[in-house]
Image 1 (cartoon, helix red, strand yellow):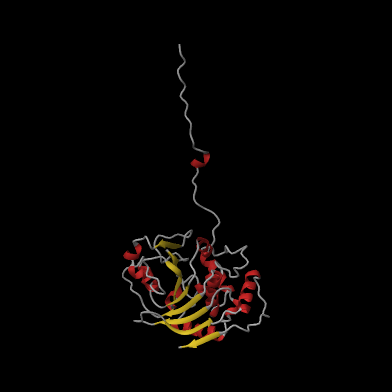
Image 2 (cartoon, rainbow, N blue to C red):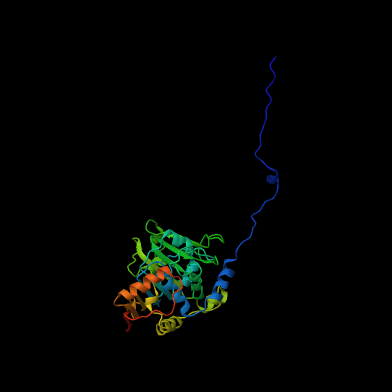
Length: 307
């Protein structure tokens, strides 16, 4: 007589399955971290200098800062809450394209992938966040991507504390056609929102008084006149000592008025003659992260044009 087979059962359950588990762990309050960053970066021209430095770190040769006075459409947006950010803005263009490492770096508010790269002297990923002095909703386009940050998580749809922003591959996405008003502000500096953009174009819509009252990032509002004053101060401070930048050859500041097809230049500064001395000094900056003030600027020709 054969023994009856003994049925055996196995279970992958564990004692933990009988417990009520919920997600819980240490978290970083992003809005608080941004407020801490802003304490270390004064308002005013510091923001503009950080944008110039970051462009220089990326190997750009041209930078354009622009006060965009225009108001854009509000009918086709990713969210109705974004309509309030379709007004005046600070624009910042440079002719370098983001690498994938750059995208990672700018998303890390507490650090930078520049560690170990001595020639990258800026604090990209930290210093960049000084732009939150001006806005609650920074964005940019580079290559085939549009990126929008919303650290408070109140304006963009379907975002979370873990991922408080959106990156859209606009070349292959239908979003550009579905949300035309959302992306029309980026059409400029050679960007048509149809083909990959061979540069980087930031947009920082200015925080008004009502938005500042409700902001968890900053209670400071900025007007168009404030940006104009920053442009004047930047020019007067002589930040155009391009000798002490590694790659940038020209910087300009512009105003983009309503009904104008393109920005109007108000200030410009460029190196007209790249001498051997300038090449030597710039190569030295690639080797030394802290240049001294003893460099002789002879041979460096600058032009400041007021139009």
